[in-house]
Image (cartoon, rainbow, N blue to C red):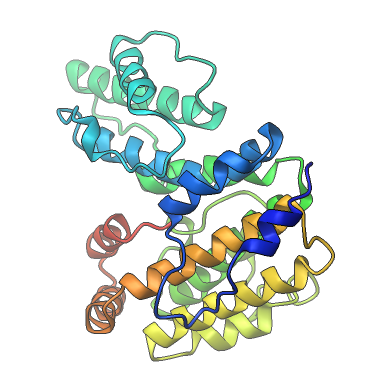
Length: 304
């Protein structure tokens, strides 16, 4: 991995409560990404792949849409390659190797499930086909996290697992509170996810393994949901600071800066009243134990 003394030294100081952006995620990608070594670009791509995920899901939900101008430019797959990917998928042809392996696995599984569903309808089979309890979005998210967590850089790997664990722990607490089927919402297959699915203990038997668990359990009780989201970002921001102390000029610090930019961008773009209404919509759905409404909320607000 390379060292980025001049780059890091030249980046402006930023804080989570900054009201103005010094970079957007897209401008960072356009201006800073090109300065990275080839190997470090592959690591940073783990972040940008989530926008590719969104592009793929958007197309699968509206397969008649072939206008590449609607693609999120923050992804790693160019419009030309994306169209090739779509055509290969439509024709059942082999997908090029320069597409991430987890995405190929996802598309193959999606195609197989659709084929089996069509065959079942054609034969009027009364037996239901066994399918994943997870939504389409979550199925791709699971594969994405597994792919990112297996990367060779420990800092990157730990960051993605941290986010998976935070998402799952808060989801598990919500499922318990509103008596939802936890199997439908916990994603991934690491040890934390397995404990959340099976443990009946208040701490899910995770206190010895997850040092930030007490903070998350306190956050789960926060009634102001906008405040809770901000405090989650504070927890992540502090984690980034603590874990880059001895990696000041490495790719880890570049990645941490990008992640902080994303947080600032999200909050500067989020109107507080709109945010409150959106979060209240989720709570209303949970109180009614309405899986349909909750899934619609997740589709509209999916953040990988």
